[in-house]
Image (tube, rainbow, N blue to C red; front, side, top):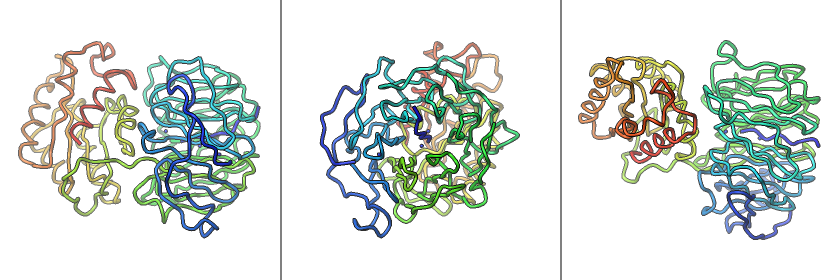
Length: 474
């Protein structure tokens, strides 16, 4: 088998099908009653439509249906091409897969997936894998289960997956740059902090499987093994953000897709159009190549839906978007946040101090990348004074809402109570501020945490509870 790689969190008829069990089986999609995207810019079907869950085709790619609004779950996260380009699968964050055209629905004996980040099809389109942020891999059809990172103490969530050309193995890539190999997928290196300055978002295999590329959200591409470095979007992305990567059929080129709909091509990856003029409200989350390499699909996902009645944001804030700024505890909750709050930009880093969070907020605001709703989860690594709180709010002046998350620390930390007291006192002076009192919940559930009493399994019960308490305040 020669798998088609789709990495993100990488398609023909219009047959209406029945829906199968959502947990152990793929869900069969039926065509939604929504505007059909065009074949290409200026193509015979008119202008491109911006519809959540509706793949946008370019070049030789064709449209065969999309996910209904009632089926979206946590939002769509990936798309994989079916046999000979005559269909595709669309995966959602809650583990549902919808098939269109001649792509089949498959059974799986694996545990029901959650926090899905990528879908990768086998080369004969007889099956596919789903990769989850927790490291879990679930196989469908003839996709062989070769192993997973589930149960490992991940320092950052899994964000992408790629299969070897013969289908005998696959790699999982974590946001922090670490790569895990299974089956015949050998390890050739990882993107360490010395090599990159932003989160990894995608991985793709070289032609013979003896190397791979990693793509970062700032547009950088890193080549390992015999993967040839064809180029990167680091100098072109500007204030945008790369979210996905797809390789050409001969794997001698690749496309990078940005959340704003732009597409960048390198090597023998030709450009067939972008959706940058159409995707204003619905960010792009994935890209998949047509099997002949003469086209591709872009997949719009759900925008963040903030509470009603929020004031309009001031200059430097992006309306309708959520940005979270946090430390390693937020890294633990990242998959759950992305599932519960579609489109959220999680800016989390290990050992981040409060002053570093203030500087990051200033940078994002200056670059017009700061969401109108800001979540702050800092204070684990040191005291927070009233003056420090004011500094943060000076930067966040003009935000529609700011949510501060209380910290949970063992009794041995001298600033445990003072940080939360500062947060609770500070929000009273700002009508747009809210407290997400995670600490109150955490005190009653010590089983949520590792032995240090601070960090939690990525995607575990504690991380999910944190995401839910944050979402309730947005």
